[in-house]
Amino acid sequence: MMKRMMMLTRTVVNRFTIVQSHSLRCHSQSRRQMSMGSESLVSRLKSCGLLQTKGLIGGKWVDAYDGRTIEVHNPANGQVIASVACMGDKETKDAISAAYDAFAPWSKLTAADRSNRLRNWYNLLIQHKEELGQLITLEQGKPIKEAIGEVGYGASFIEFFAEEAKRVYGDIIPATLPDRRLFVLKQPVGVVGVVTPWNFPLAMITRKVGPALACGCTVVIKPSEFTPLTALAAAELALQSGIPPGVLNVVMGDAPKIGNSLLESPQVRKITFTGSTAIGKKLMVGAAETVKKVSLELGGNAPCIVFDDADLEVALKGSLATKFRNSGQTCVCANRILVQEGIYEKFTSAFSNAVQDLKVGNGFSEGVVQGPLINEAAVQKVDSFVQDAISKGAKVLVGGKRHSLGFTFYEPTIIGDVKNEMLIARQEVFGPVAPVIRFKTEEEAIQIANDTNAGLAAYIFTNSMKRSWRVAEALEYGIVGVNEGLVSTEVAPFGGYKQSGLGREGSKYGLDEYLEIKYVCMGNMG
Image 1 (tube, rainbow, N blue to C red):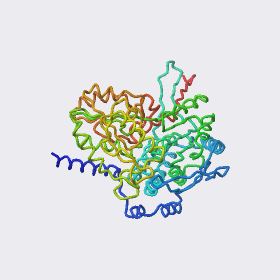
Image 2 (cartoon, rainbow, N blue to C red):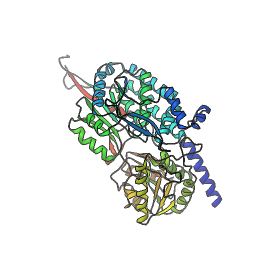
Image 3 (cartoon, rainbow, N blue to C red):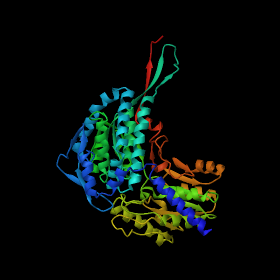
């Protein structure tokens, strides 16, 4: 039995490593580049034009008007990668003006024209997937295979919405009077403020900008100050693809000033944001003054429910993928792993063995599947959650402390005997810590899972078709994975219930977030 369990663990870890690659293999040139020091890699990225440090306003690369800069650090070693322009309200207002001026000509292009330009952008993103992946690993820290996987995932939104640009349909309504004709038109909302996080520095941009540009909107992007380099590289490729000046603008630096300028401007007609629930609430309040449309993809507290009748190998593979991808720094990561009592001991034993085998290190090192956390504040938060759980009776099964590598590395951790009242089960840990909660019945699992203000993603592992339907329908979440830990795709709607946000991203439903509906009544048509 023990031998079979060890074989199962090795199989699951190997498959998890394959999943991390997102089916993208690095070519020999990329492997050579991964072994280079950071300085030579930065030099190469500069030489190919993908390491930009200025903001993009009206098609021109510009410094901050007062000359200020901020440093971008590699979280794996603390080294400075580059210094970028630290922009504020003046630059943001100019970016808004550029987007506003570009809106009319861009929205008047045919859908086919916009589609072709987006397709060109997609092709360039894929052509430069290795360089973009290297940038992501440099500034965000995730393993290079996972970073290149993000480029493929992020580019898929540009490809999908390039196609959907030609499918923004209106409607004809049967008239109530014989001499009238009633039409419904869908038109772009206007200038969009795009505020994105650091955990997916490319994909969170393309998931928003793709549908916005497809509909005919123009954008002002505010990437995270921790990871602006990927956004700037993507913007450079957008220019090369034929997207006109002013259609896509990037400002970064002083987040409060940039955010306030976007909120206060009557020329900005929509705000789309991915990030914490606390900041999302502030944006909602700020957007109310000018009654802007708002799309919010906020925090999660995802339950991963493993029932007694689950296939153990499938449950282990799925739990590893959904918990430890990006070192646990995703909004759809399993934040609570609920395991039914009949399989609890067997699952936690095999899960612990698998997690012990996860290789932690610099994202450019061979075989690494767990990189660093984004910064020191993230490490302190994760550790405080772990210590709180321990003080309240939870037991550390694996890990539970800072990694011996130092910097912002944290050991992949499993904590058993967790109660739903503990801080680690109430709030999003956003790190490589898996709290395991024991439950008895299906009803209890649903009650625990729904006992939260969040409602983004949830996961179920069971071999019962009837149970999968019952539980999926009962869970108060916008996304439910059944026997699957990786659920994100460009073709399906992404968004949450309750305080996990408003609106949906991706899929055909994602277009509607960037469109206004206009009703036209034509009289005297008899």
